Amino acid sequence: MRLFILFLPLLWCIPMSSMAQGDIINEVKESIKAGSSKELSKYLNSSVDVTMNGDMATYSKTQAEFILRDFFKENPPSSFTIVHQGASKGGLPYAIGQYLSGNNTFRVWMRIKNEGSKYLIHEISFIRE
Image 1 (tube, rainbow, N blue to C red):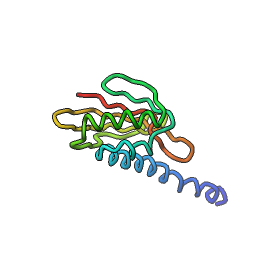
Image 2: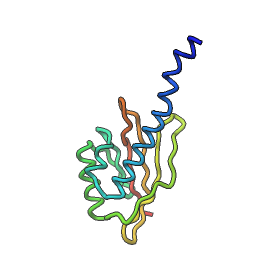
Image 3: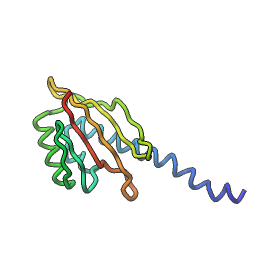
Image 4: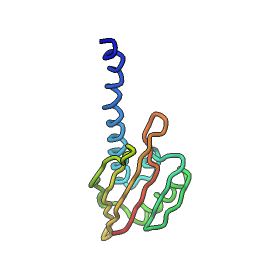
């Protein structure tokens, strides 16, 4: 019984952890759907790998916000949907989405890491299909 009481608080943390993963994906989805680099930057890690049409570079959070702002300005969103989400073998959450802008379709891929007490985007890609 004592063992159960010791582990009971840990059981409450498990759903909260997965809920936090889902929350960031939903928040990021809404930010991308709105084409808001400012809102999206709230969920970026301090260093972010950003890929735009095959060109990948590592940026600071502030630099990544400017890159995303320019992308959204050149490609205003018509719609954005998450088509798949899951976790890697190591437990890192990820999501794959489809971003539509006019006649252009982009595959969006993001990898999320737990940084301290919250989940943040570590890598994000926009690849024209």
